[in-house]
Image 1: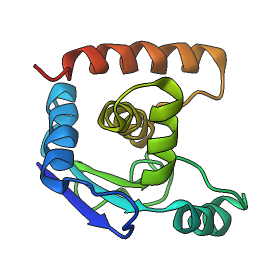
Image 2: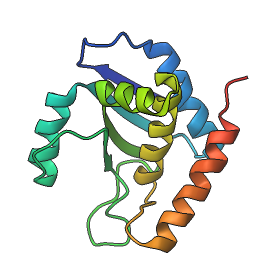
Image 3: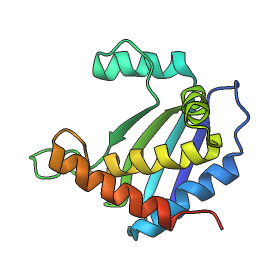
Image 4: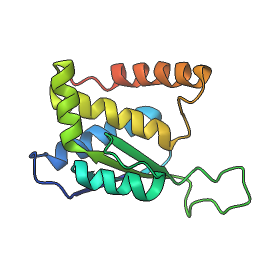
Length: 149
């Protein structure tokens, strides 16, 4: 298992070891074979730029997911190794704001957004009601499995 983290924001102190452990715990609970995940921590401006460049949406968001599995079932080549999940881009200030709004620790919100992003990397989405319900169900199961003891 490999979780690579790059921190390109300096507004909020993030314990990268703890974050790597958190992401690793989620991946272990999914029982994926040799998963590889890349996480970029950024600020609102950084994620807004990426959101504009890749999705044509000129506003910040909390997380963007770039899956390496999107091409499965098409003529395009698969990733070099099946465990390669993709990249998550996370706005740490957005996570902090969401945590404050929900009155939870920002680490709790970070875990929830990591689960959400990883599920997107695995192909889950919430475009249709049935897909949204399936994703919410798995999200809930993972949240419970990954509770810190």
